[in-house]
Amino acid sequence: MIKSRRSGLLIVFTGKGKGKTTAALGTAFRALGYGWKICMVQFIKGTWKYGEIKSIAQQGEQFELHPLGAGFYKILDDDQPEEVHRQAAAQAVDLVIDKLQSEVYDMVIADELNVAYDAGLIDETSIRRILDARPKHVHLIVTGRGAPDFLIEAADMVTDMQEVKHPYRKGQKAQPGIDY
Image (tube, rainbow, N blue to C red; front, side, top):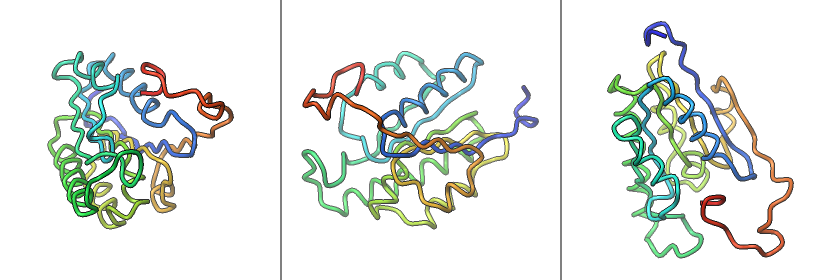
């Protein structure tokens, strides 16, 4: 489909269950099959190494990944000052806007944007700047728990991931290839 005729969607994957980033990546890998160019900007996961990084790297120039977060904020082994997290989130907002406005990408993913908002690292104005920057033909996927009501209202499609059962609840540790 010609880009100028495509109707880009605002897609939100949110909820307390696992699979939000995985759903975004599944959508991106489907789009790669049609030759689309994808960019993913990560707001929180910047310091972790996980399987998605390896898979995306294998896509060459068709799929860019920018892990800009300073790590998981206030959980796990976070030892960064709050200001470092705020600066990383602000940089991620600016990069998402730049990538949307570049007219190079068919799809841009703002991974864990909702978490950055919910944690107070960015504000509503930052998210609205992103939404306003999106050209009509570009798909924007936003992931993360706690999607704000104004984003849900603006979205064309929202999926709320619900945890029904997870092996973590039985004490099983996260597994490479499944959980990261």
